[in-house]
Image 1 (spheres, rainbow, N blue to C red):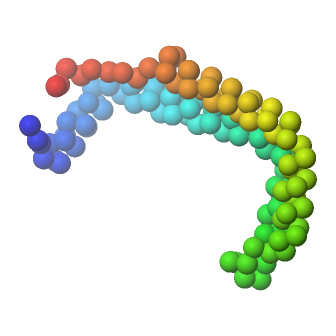
Image 2 (image 1 turned 90 degrees about the horizontal axis):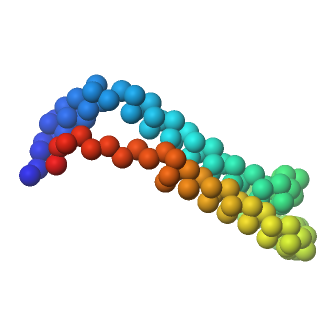
Image 3 (image 1 turned 30 degrees about the vertical axis):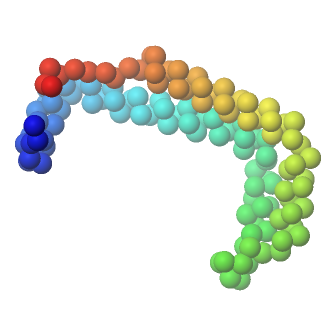
Length: 119
């Protein structure tokens, strides 16, 4: 059974008026997921170092926006980052751990399954 776009919009607004607290909970769920997603990036940024990232971005700037800049400087920065592979590996595992906890919180602690009875 297909319904028109106007009917679908009316139905959605009726559900919104009937369940306003679920909308607030859905927004809070999105905020929690976003916090875990951003928190997973923090160990990686700390391992690479903000200074190294800034230097990498500065090395990529040139007069031409499509010009990658001095290749030697970029290669030196990549080589410097590659020498610290244990820290990068640990940061990768830390990021995966944070994202896994976020996934578990999303799946188990914040279930937003509702059944309005309309099938």
